[in-house]
Length: 387
Image (cartoon, rainbow, N blue to C red; front, side, top):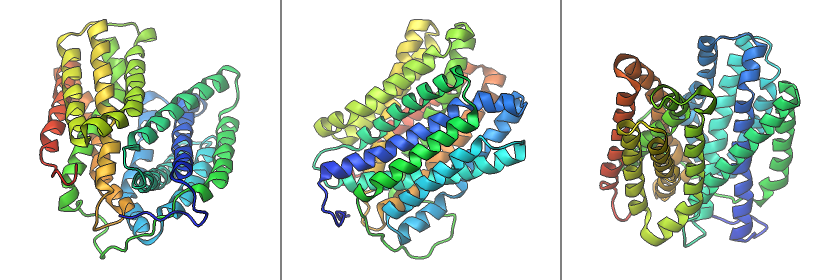
């Protein structure tokens, strides 16, 4: 697909910078909200079960509206959808701190999930359009910026909590920052004309040509969210590290994932996307098995580093390949494969708990390791013309 430069004829470098800003805003906004979850739990007097149920509202909103995002991106430019999605995202982020009861918080988080879906898919569609202007891979770098923004948002949240800044003022301030930067940088992004699609049912499986990409995303996102939800618990329950330092496993995983995203493009440019994806699956498989069979601090740290490196580039690289579709716009293609990908993100981690309760956390992590092998196998089904 050929991307069209803005009317101001900005250079690819300028377009890349503007798109990077929106990846940063997405990561900074999300981690700002995540940093205040304990504060919100205390303010609304929630127990762990109640909090878990409330938090589920956001991914439900995200998942249910993925088909709607695909339709919007087939009728409007990704720049317009990103602009409106980012403003909606900022508004809902600012509203979170003003929720005074559980039902208000459920409604706000549902809408926050909807806005995050619109914003993230359209931002990735923009990234695919910018990628088309380069003869080398730059896609993973955008996701690395998202991860760096996550660290920045978490650090900002820490200081806000430390200095007793109220949740509503903190998130409202971040919301205003998002709006200001959106207005400043939206004109510098790329215009990608929509590709009208034939009418389909609202909920359909991805196109056959995109199904392999969808399954790879499913495996990667399942591993990624498993590490988000269970890595610290694994270090505490299996490795027997004290709770105060159990987050070390999660920290090394996040650092490795961020590092992998910043070096991933160099690997793709040298070895090709398919080779990088194969090694990503191997890293996930070997890293998790190392944590399972060598449940000690150093081997588990090394294992989680391998998993972080493995997960880091899979989604951006799959998005890059899927965005080359000649039958639909990049945004529509990304929304299509994300529908199955996010199922892995949402459904698999809760099953870890059930398996762990029945047979132990080590066995559940061993089963997740098979998803890394699944990635390796699926990559062999990608045609050379696509990879």
